[in-house]
Length: 146
Image 1 (cartoon, rainbow, N blue to C red):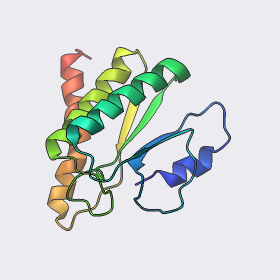
Image 2: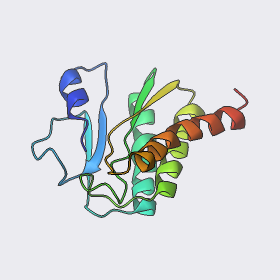
Image 3: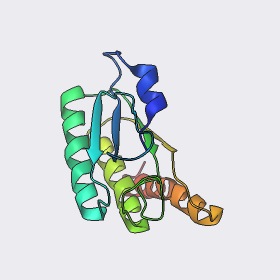
Image 4: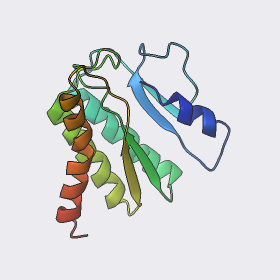
């Protein structure tokens, strides 16, 4: 899903960089313009997705050089999410969280993360997926001796 509210709120702001990575054909059909939109092919799986995340995040950190990163860790790219249209696994989501947190921290930039989109009929399954961000942040805390 595209972060259309965030994109709308900050449209035209030169001091705020918004990034949205989402399936090109997902909801909503008419999307707001982010500073950088990365439309992904339906059915993209873990390895291709994570390669794309690495390239995009690295480029944004180098080119925009933010003072702070606010990371919305949506779980709608999961294969079980009917709206997200991507095919990530739980392991792929966890790897994404670790990768994003590690990349931003390695650049010396503060990061705050929050849970975002994601849909599943079993709320326990959904809650566990949302917890992946917090588990990854805990691991970063230990690994970086914060």
